[in-house]
Image 1 (cartoon, helix red, strand yellow):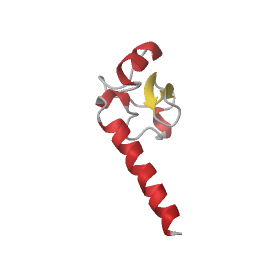
Image 2: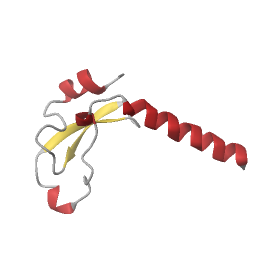
Image 3: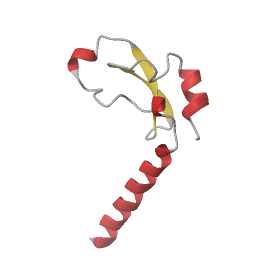
Image 4: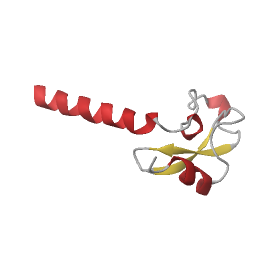
Length: 79
């Protein structure tokens, strides 16, 4: 049991450290699941689970996210 918990902790820490050095605009907005925002503009953010940029329709701040997937990959992927 303890080795399982330890392994999960290591994976969690590594995934957090993996995205900490990225610019803020690579991450999804904090309240991305707010249903009032789903019809607004779609932008791309980096998803560490898929190691790719995904489109998300949400409430984005002016300087967050990317309008083009290629730009998201250039700035966020493998950083």
